[in-house]
Image 1 (cartoon, one colour):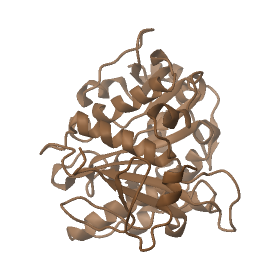
Image 2 (image 1 turned 60 degrees about the vertical axis):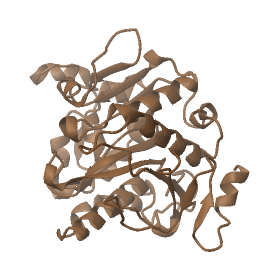
Image 3 (image 1 turned 120 degrees about the vertical axis):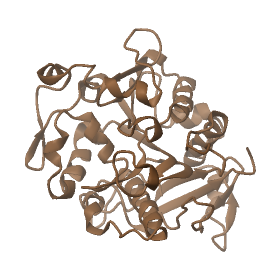
Length: 361
């Protein structure tokens, strides 16, 4: 661990301390300027010992970088500012001074890297290109070949609406859906032939995830969901399987937890970077403009449970602020995932580092 990261742990009063990037880092914050901040959450290694409740015995670090002016009035990210946010997040998470060294913590030049984005909300509520682009540049800086990077979601048809161009060539970063544009029974050829058991269901993974990539970076959004309560990192992988509708009973519990505990996801996931530039607190998962707001944040973490716990807290805080009933038990898959040892939802075991770069960029 670097001296900068160790220094962050020595703040005597929970106030602001300096991190690897030299930015101000807050451990105690609150809702202000229309953007939700939290206290008591973070990034965890999901390796190592677990306690009797399945929780990791190590503390998870989670970095949330914020900039009040990161988006325009529609919530569209401003590329130069967002790049600084993503770069800051990865440096703070790793404690590394250079982007090359930071990204090398997660990938090697030999990896084929998948970036799982979320395009279901269309142009106004999907993972934004301005978040993806600095991640791509970081991977290349770490030595990954551009054609060994696949940016994917469920369907080809969603890419252009969200501002991405399809590319399935041998030149440059590849962008395409798990379905490769096929419809009906033709889609089946692009998914694994052997099912994977998820609780009492049989699931078929995209060949992108199951066979083509060696490393995975999950780039979800923060949204409420009428069935599962929230859709952040865990539910983003409904776009990685052929038959997500089979996993919706009982508020997707225990299916979401069990799905993310399967080898194709658990063993290949290296990092989660949340596009928190805009978020949705009611009426999701499709875009619902009256309930969409500019959260103006980027979150980086390696623990899917911690990410979803923090995302849930952000949404619940925004619902309370606007007089909307809490999600409550609908989002119970987060606790289930913690119980089976997938990560932690215990605030005492999540080390949240909030970094505000509004005055620095």
